[in-house]
Amino acid sequence: GVIVDINTPTAEALELIRTSAPCQNLVERISCKKRWFSRTPNHKHDVVAIDCGIKYSFIRQLNMKGCNVTIVPFNSTAEEIMAFNPDGIFVSNGPGDPADVPGVCEVVKQLRGKLPIFGVDLGHQIIAMSYGAKNERLKFGHHGCNHPVKCLENGKLEIVSQNHNFVVEEKSLEGTPLTVTHRNLLDNTVAGIASPTDKVFS
Image 1: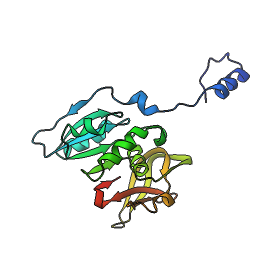
Image 2: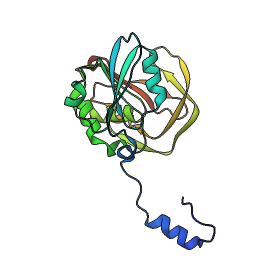
Image 3: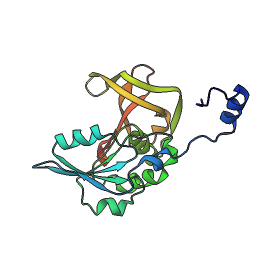
Image 4: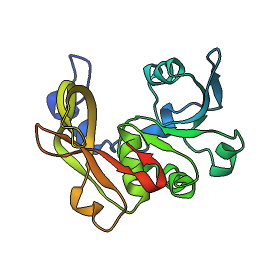
């Protein structure tokens, strides 16, 4: 779509759409430019959050669980992250195609097994990629606050908010140490994965 002045001829507006390049690497445009901190009193753990477009609500939830959070840009290296001596890594949500951020995928690959890693949304897709799994684009995407997701471990059903256009391709998980832990019941797609050996889950 395009937003134009009311006097713009339809043919001109359509040509503008046709000749515009699609937005790529949206994460680079919205990730923080330098690290920042969100502290909580009497903290129990130190978590580094890789900012791919992080929602403040995730940071608040981590604080409420007793975690001091250091938020770092998406292009931070594994060495820069480990310099904070974290107890765990959080790979955040964010917009766009996970294939646009191979650097974050490489960091996860380097750090998995060394300390717990948790991913949400785009972070979930990046974790899958770091093990060699693939993501596929959905026809319409998952958008809204009423998606039924089933936890396969205990059968519990949760109604969750989702906003993404890509999902982990289930067949591509074969041969990896990742197992499916959650499933979206609207279309039976993968909504959660884990590797207990590597302490990785999303």
